[in-house]
Length: 210
Image 1: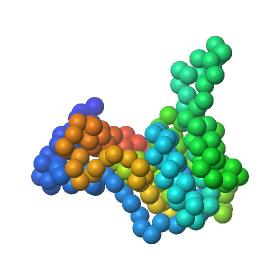
Image 2: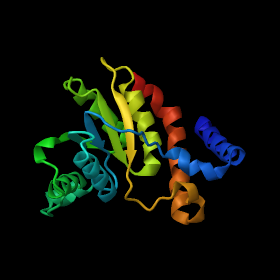
Image 3: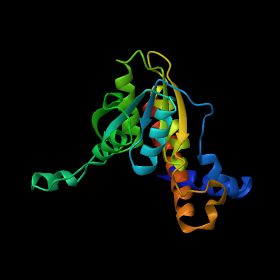
Image 4: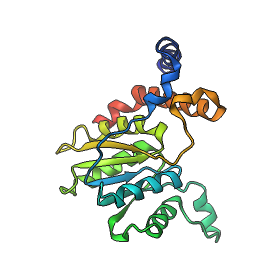
């Protein structure tokens, strides 16, 4: 806990020393040109990520789309009591198909994932059996791409064969990385991401690399 608190203090000091206006932009990783064997749509917000993935698929940037099934948490209890629940994963799949992505291009991986770390580990295990995929594009909200790439690179670091990890942040969000400090939502997103990055460095990175 002491290490974690120290990490947060380091973030605060670093933001002040290096100029906090650039803090939002650093969180956004965008690789250009982007082309890979498959895309990975990270769960979370659905609309912006599905739209981005659809655009890339139509532009022939990747022929396959991988989605790790997202945890439904307490919604499972509602299902047990007869409530008809459409999961975020199912909504993403249905939206992609409606937008013109062929269903056989989409693979949903079971996993009940509750975090990006769990998604990365499930994708890593899946790729062990997919020698045709040695490069992936992570599709996520802009502020999440830097941390997501760190997690996936660490998870795939010791794979039997190298896998290139690229990022394509969704263009369909209201997040303005160059002006993040001008509204409450932007401040919350940026501060939260930096705290999570420190948590990754302190608690998750070595575990994922094993």
